[in-house]
Image (cartoon, rainbow, N blue to C red; front, side, top):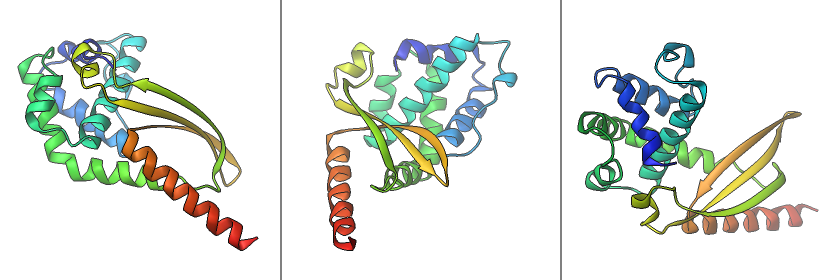
Length: 180
């Protein structure tokens, strides 16, 4: 994600910004996200996808890292003040819900669901302000099979979250081995 991509929010009026942001949060929380048809006159398909991915990544990052209000403002310094405040207000008002969704998403991974995975380590976000945080993240891509239906899931986690995942998988593996 780059802050320059989030500045695409400038194409949306400050009054309409909260509606879009709350719909993006809905998507992060596993519900229906915003519909392109509502915004097709503002952004091209590529811009729309970039904006949604950037906003979703930013929301997960800010909540996952427990960023303070000032840190969020600093990260959004390239964004118009009214829109940055809308992002902050959305994060504040839905913080518990987002955090709960992120925890559920992480806990939903079990060793019996893992079929194939691809490890890729990258530096957190691409903006100079965000990369200055120097936070290494792991982007874990999983192909999961649920009731015979295969789906892909991408999870971004920091070092502590990765260690927690590894510990959980090791514990699950011990249980599976005891059952054999």
